[in-house]
Image (tube, rainbow, N blue to C red; front, side, top):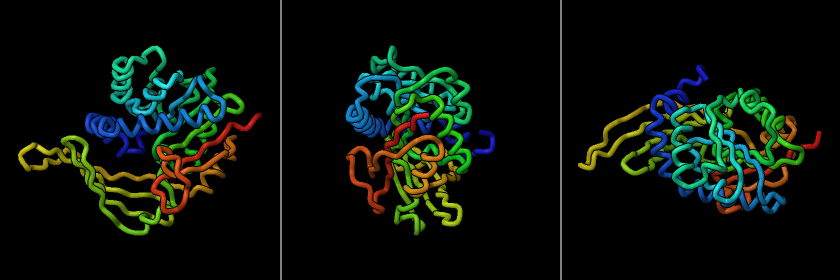
Length: 265
């Protein structure tokens, strides 16, 4: 991922900061995992082997393992994977989880010979690459999946979000960290361009800058994503907004969630 400099800076060089952010959204990960488990069970998958393709520090993989699934989490950030292993032990699911370091573009090589009952992609991790690379990743995930396997893309950002038409600022707090995000949307290349400024509250009313980084994420329309999935061996089964609430997808929704199944070869 040498060409993705912002990913290297945020997720490797300052992984400590992003782990704090993920820890601050751990309960959100638990809610997402519960909804994914509900979708699995509604589709007849009460147990089985699940691949979390961009697992971070396990904030969804670990709660999903607590629901009774065997989960393999993959992420290119070694600090994230190390933290996920510690948390798996802490939450008592070390025997039902396995965490591996790998670039998503090499995931078929790292997991060669394995077959999964389900695959999950949480948040907008797929959008870190260009469209052709995202397609290739989805194709590789299909090669690792059994016929009829379930794919859940949960809470990804999407092109139809009305707010992308405007420049806006978002402030969020995670413990002592304050994240200021200034967003711009590039309608030609369908990219969300953001300046992230992460600051530390020293407890005395001062904010100390920890990191400033420019991020770039490709966002898709629901139709574009469904077409990509079809080309890569996945058939869309259902669509939601925020998967935590299983809400109906309408363009005002901030998030897009898709449930697909591996087309039989």
